[in-house]
Each structure stands twice: as C-alpha cells, then as structure tokens.
Amino acid sequence: MRIRKRERKKRILTAVFLAGSMLLTACGKTGGKEVLEIQKDGYEKNSYNTVTVMRGDLEPVLTLTLKIENFERINYSVTQQELEVEKVHVSVGDRVKAGDVLVTFKAEDIEEKIEAYNTEIEEKQLLIEHYGKLMDLDPETDYKEDIEMLKEDIRIADLYISEAEERLKNYRITAEKSGTITYVSELLAGDFVLANTSLITEACGSGGYTAVTEDDYEWKEGEVFEAVSGAASYDMKLVEVLPEEKDGQTVYTLRFEPESDMTAISEQEQPTITIRKEIQKNVVYVKKGAIRDADGKPYVYVLDENGYRDAVFVTVGDEVDGFLIITEGLSGGEKVTVN
Image: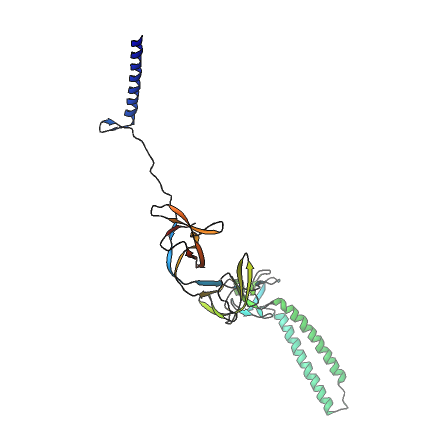
C-alpha cells in the first residue's frame, strides 16, 4: 500500500512539472531555453505648457481706450413716398449743429409760392413807402387807409409763407442735435428715396471722452495726451479724475476734452492713449497666466530637471503688459507651468 501511494505521488508531481514546462514553452524561447516574457508599460511623464521666468528691465505701457460720453445715435428718414433728391449737404465725418440742413428734396411748387409771396410783400412795402412820401409832400392827401390795407395784405402773405415753409420742412432733413455724421445712405446718390428708410445717421454726445483704469499713474488734471485713431492723432486734455473704490481696488474714471478738431472721427472709432511709464530695472517677471492662487496666496508650479513640478509660493508686484513682477520666490530662469 505504501509503495502504491509513493508511486501515485510521483505521478502527480511529474504531471505538474510537465504542465509547467508546457506553460513556459508557450511564452517564448531565448537561446534555445524557455523564458517567461513579462510585458511592462514604460513610465510616462505628464506634459505641461511652460514659460520661462524672466529677469531684466520692463517698460510699463498703459493704454487707455476712449469712449464718447453720453452717446446717442439719431437715424433720419422721410415719411413721404418717392421724394426727389435735390442736394446732400453732408458726408461721413462732418460735424453738424442742431438745425443744420442735411438733405434737401425738390419741392418746386412750394418754393415758387414762397418766392411769389415774398415778391408780393416787397412790392407792397415799396408801395407803403411811396404813399408815405406822397403824404409828406402834400399833407392834405390821405393814404392811411390804403396803407393799412397793404399792411393787412402783407400780414396775410406772411401767414401763407409760414404755412409753406412748414410744408417745406417735409422736404428737408435737418439735424436735431449737434453731432457727427456717421452714415450717409447710397440711396441719396440716386434720384428718388423711399419713405421710412434710414438715410442719415448722426452720433451725438457731449463732445467729451471717458476712459476707465485701475492704474495708479499720477493723474494730473490739465495734462494733455496724444490720442490715436487709425493714422490720425488728436490732443486730449484730462479735465477730471474721478476715483472710486470697488472691491478694495481704486478705479479711476478719466474725462477728456479734445483740443483738436474731431469732426473726422466716427462713432465706431475709439481713440487710444498710450502712456509709457518709468522703466523698472532688473526685475523678475513672468506671464500672468503662470500665477495660481491658494486661499489668497499666489504660487507657481516650477518644473525640475526631471520634469516634475513643485508648488512655490511667490510675492507678486505690479502687472506690466500681461506680465507680473515677482518680488520674492523666484530668481529668473525657472520653467513654470501656465494655466
């Protein structure tokens, strides 16, 4: 019995050994020997967008964008159908005053009546003067009644002229307020225009400009700056500085008045003022997007030579053209990640 049991155990061990050999053979061979091949993924580092911390001189540049104060747009059209254009008195960029005629349309019949009434008034006034001279020469002659009749005729003619001029207003487009012409329809270059179609657009405002900034530049009322719009430049005087506290930050509203002719500027244009501030020497600075925040404390992620990142707290100074000056925490040359 013991012999049979030992033989049985030997058979089981032999079977296990053969099965293991088969598994090794299925995995692969090297140099005629069966070797277990194990696949292992290599280590992959995370990739980051990075910038280099700089050290050098920075020239802060402040750019102000000016906007027209109390801006209003007025669109002009006509209510009559198929008015015939006589003359367009303005073009884009023209500065106009309230009451200025912008467009006139043909109204020959009304104008002829006004001219006829004016001629009649002139003739009757001459006749009144003539009767007056006759009475001066001969005191016994009396033309007072005739003179009164002539004066009444003149009064009636004046009424007709007033009515005709009121009708004539329908054949003119006049400026409601002072402002700048920003649009003239191409329809006015033709013979006729249709009713209720925008023909002229005027931009109105106080004539002043405003800009808003948080920069603590030493603003001085009365100082004159150069404003640029396209290829043109204009002189702008700073007339008022209005500081206001918002969320712990001082915000300055600046009011400017032009000292140059601004008639050529349109409502779409926003002049800019560029101010070059004092150069800051040998400072450490980095792009604003590299600065992160942890409970109100600014920090950056600095990459080491192996590509791993460490959080480093920093002290931030002024912002200059999208860069933040670092007063503590970095020395320049480091690579940091950006958001």
